[in-house]
Length: 453
Image (cartoon, rainbow, N blue to C red):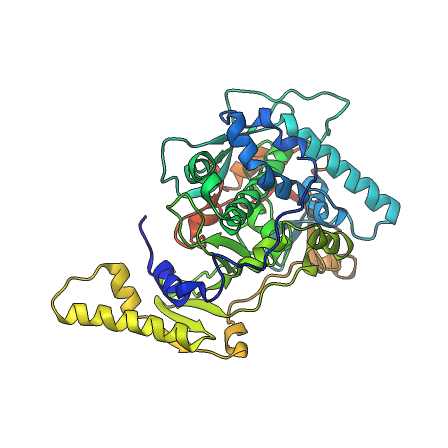
């Protein structure tokens, strides 16, 4: 893929790590000591030797924390037990929230059923690292493994998974390379960035695996009425957990450089007119996820208890043109000097690469805090009502077949002309906002419906 202008611009603005995107002497070491969730047991990593697995353990503990508390596993209730509903105003299919209007005891029972399902994934999911091809184009992806079957038993397993379906989650080679060669020599912040990225990718794919095991195919219904038109369980979970999508800008090297966040959004215009924004994520934000004190807040108040970091450095792409915003005049001056040097090279007859031309044409703004926080991109909600008041407007809605005990009929999907795909993946292409970022093809499900009277 090569280095993008986005990477070059942020790297220059962060000269001498002025925004502490790479190192931070104030951060504390990890104090997570949770037992690793059974789905991440060593035997499920089918090509991972003990030494590599040992290097993964801190990432696996962080991944296990995402599955630990009531406030975090609530996300899985709707994918597992929600009823498909159709909003006739938008013709959008989405799932109900089974937690709504339930007693405390009923909510506890639903969460326990989620925990049983997650435990059942210990023998329904395998993980495999790419060890040869280094340019996979994704962080991780989920597929149905046609060569093996899961072995369920009546004691530990949920009745809501398709019997025999086994999901294989592929992980990119760069993760393997870091764990196999670079891990021991890296600084603690560098390890944190890698472990955070790996843990998020694992849970992103676990969310896809839940849908696959629940329905027996790779079709995904929308979780909420106010979510994007193209359903994507993994990004929906990231939006729930963080209020954004967090990815590295350097997608080729084995070590994880600085991390950038963006809104989970989709622009339906022509690709050249897409409006996108990326904000730099400091190490202080990443490191807190490895501390028990952070998780104590989440246990009490949910993921939104952890605020996103203030925006100090931002890159915007609008109508194909880049603008860099920074709160530091020194950062602005550094980027302007880079632009001037490239312009001088061009004037001297040197042929610039497309990346260098993009950098040279980038607009640079010394911005105030309000200017940095301002955005024209709509923010999808993390919480709030999962569906409209159906009882109050029943004439405008249709209810579809319940999937509480069986999958949505695959025949009905194909009769309606909806497409399936061979894999669901957490994309590493460009900025992850392209149409291929969520999946290879459209993933909406449109089940057979009956009108609610």
